[in-house]
Image 1 (cartoon, rainbow, N blue to C red):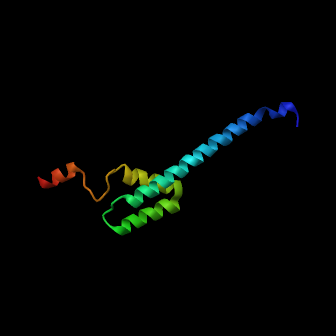
Image 2: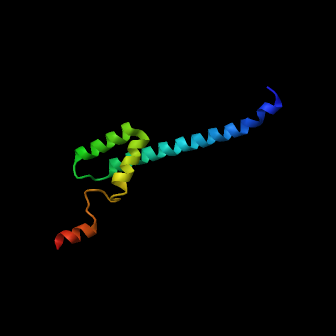
Image 3: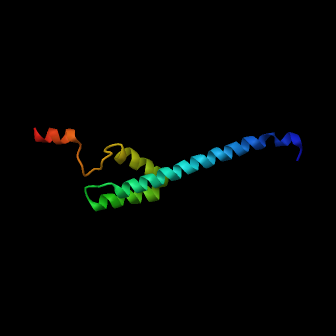
Length: 91
């Protein structure tokens, strides 16, 4: 291998590091969503089990769906209705 062929090595190493960091972030996000789902209070147990299956089998896609559908909808859990909803029901 000649010296002129070695110019790409730092670039390839940088791409490898970036790919590893993205992979690590995806794994951390996946584990975070599993823990969040396991600790969250749902209306019933089958709903929790279904979401855990979606997250575990769906990997990062299932985690993203859970994050968008459940976690952003109500950060305190689905068993607890938001205060505004309770006020509207009382009227």
